Length: 147
Image 1: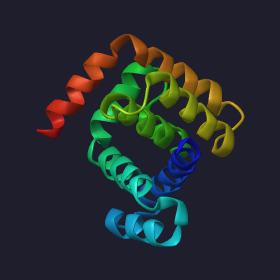
Image 2: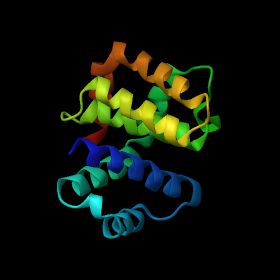
Image 3: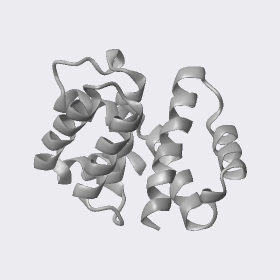
């Protein structure tokens, strides 16, 4: 299960990157990924779908949180990969009761190592490290937005 979720997070990053950079419709991208990738069957597929769609739905709130944690870096000027990794991790930290904080941060750093620039892992770790101090506030903001 652990490896399936790790693989799913990589696919979430790729799907969100496609949606963000090319503008393909989210439902079509999600359906295509679910059909194409064997790992996205059952619970892992639901995890993938929830992470993609909820990250998109919460994008403006997540970007505000990124801006608070990295005030020297305008969110719209961040590399798409870095911004997307941070959005995924922040949503998972705030909303997924199945993912401990340390796991969400570690998984984000691993995605940054795999897909980002040489400096991306340190940047992602630093931004997410700042989140630890107001994790409950993030959960509250996202839950209010979902109502």
